[in-house]
Image 1 (cartoon, rainbow, N blue to C red):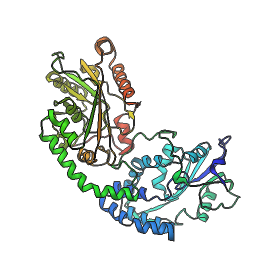
Image 2: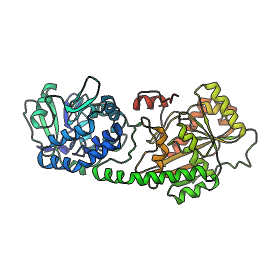
Image 3: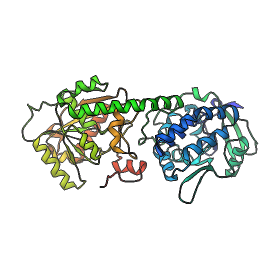
Image 4: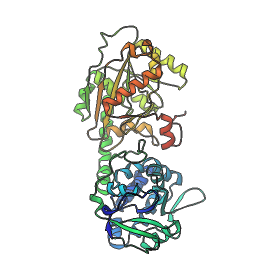
Length: 484
């Protein structure tokens, strides 16, 4: 059997390809991390710890006894008693980000050139299909089917005939689909009947292969959810869970200091506690600005803490408008907050009132985005503010994301501050000149698009037309509103 590097990608537009998933299209062979993500995001920490404790047994079964037994154990622990809707939600919102980081670039070069694409995997189909169909353009996914009872709860077992894992079952599954032209097999797999396939190629040492560069898929993964930044392989997962109690204590100390200490010393306080705030550009001096109204800082949106970090960098509290944050976050906030109602007239009146009293910060994206993209800027700020200062904000974390779409938003600042040494980058840009504002004859949408483009250029991000509704409909199945 020849190596996949020798497979030609030319003239394949009318042909069909079948590929193994783990160990072939994905560089990693052991799917443990995906089940741990299902546990953590679908059930919670306790079930995740149970699976982590079973990791040595899973490894022993997977390498020495039977991969089928290992898969059965992971499915039972991670899915027993979990709602099928919760499993599907994790597959839609959390797993795609980790799948795309594990794609083998060489295998994708071959796989992507075929007209019809089929994946064969021992993983439950419900975990793979949302990513494969939505982002890779796969036509069919043949995987293990999990059992769900009449109440929509997973039983932890699988439907007959069992796992799409052994050579025989994979062959039978593909035979039911159609005759294929090329089959990409992970190293160690044996080629089967030539009556269903014309060419066979082997993928060797896939764990050492080059990963696929981000955003090279037909549809990039822009929105994703989940708390973990890194792929939770067993050792990384163990370190993460060991750090969690210490990290939570550190987060409480950082949040308490931020809520109680004066704003003019918080920049230095955060640095002493390991939170790095890097400031670029020259923010306007509040003493020298015109007295007619305050300055509106129009910021890109990465986490709930953007306005607080901006205030810390300025050394003075700046009022922030908020859309749907928790009451706990409002209570702990060291800066004034103005809750918007999404009634345009009422919100415009509230923002104008705040500007008459002083400076304020507004995030026109309306929600956070973790990837290097900017969502569409709402144009309301351009109509209301005389002095507009764009602010390019970005943050870097290594363990936990400080934002969520499906989880409890009150914990967002805690998870951000649980990172050992998070970094916030704040770049103040030049104030928008009069001739490029609404007072100079520009429409509010032209001003908003211009500010978005300028901010994206500084950050090296890409502008999009996606909105808050687009994000929450994809990740959470709602419009993102928090109702009383």
